[in-house]
Image 1 (tube, rainbow, N blue to C red):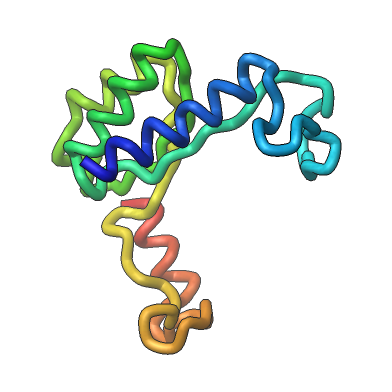
Image 2 (cartoon, rainbow, N blue to C red):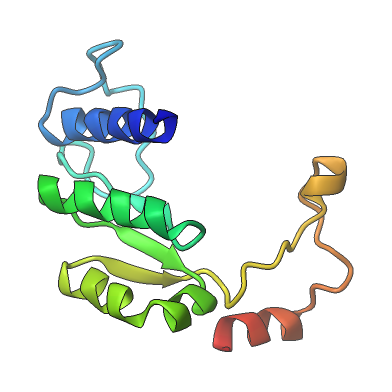
Length: 133
């Protein structure tokens, strides 16, 4: 299962950083840009866009629980409505839930021209409806 190997590799890299082993390739983290927090702190923020595939979401949650790691998971309103018990479990396990709109509409023209230009129909009102639904 290729997805499983990729996720385990990512988790292994994150765990190396969390355990203070620094960047395995160079052994030096001084060149990494830190936008927030203290440079000497051995903390990392982990975020996921959850909800596209419930199997993958559960797989990631199982690994996080096994390793004792919490993260921020951005969920769509549709996922929350369809999986309320799982979302409550995420919160009980200490994860933070972020808003990823109601239905995850494609807001840019990336799929047609490889540019992140906003689609003409995406207005402030449209975004407000997506976020507040």
